[in-house]
Image (cartoon, rainbow, N blue to C red):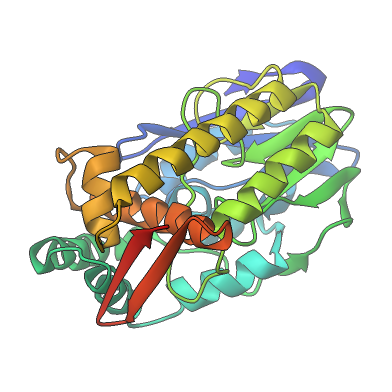
Length: 311
């Protein structure tokens, strides 16, 4: 546990993923602590949480989930069981979580969707296997209380900043942005297009970055890596990154029809495992669909096979 300015405490838990850790945050309040995010629901949850809770001078009375991804929400049931805290989640993110984690066929639908965009069947089967392995570690809180833009949680303003997920929320107070995966210091947060999601996640994310510039927080506390010391400048860098990536994407598509998997090989290289390729194809799709909206590409085909062509 790391002490941060303003009495905030950062908890860092290991992950069995390429990102080797995730940060959760404890925000002090008059009636107790607000925990932001819960980490993955690994088997040693009690062993990880009990010494943390014993060290606190007040109870954890609230849990806020920034977004439904497993490394941020998967340990929700564990944290709730150990604290008895009220749990909150963005209303839109809660709906997305139910569509994904509450669905018995999500991994099948995702695999079929990606195959329709060119992913080889062999990689799709690896994704199904991975989903079966990870399912026991994804235990979000059921029926969290919904939050929307403008709500206030113990003095922290709720901001809806979609892009990384459709319903991603952040908390803002006194220039401190508890950012989840909206802003990261060393890497670009993934922005992908998935089944049953909003149609233009990259456009959403660029709008959220512009909103961050307007708000100009003095520091952002992210879900991974170091604090972002100049969030507005980091937002500008990410906008420029995606501008360049859009140019690279339209060049990779060219004048002959290509599917998103083929384009992802150009953009992300060939040395990715099945899980990494899933993110690469989804992010490529987000950029391809933004290019269509900008009048720089066109789409053809249906769910059984989709291709794109530069204009």
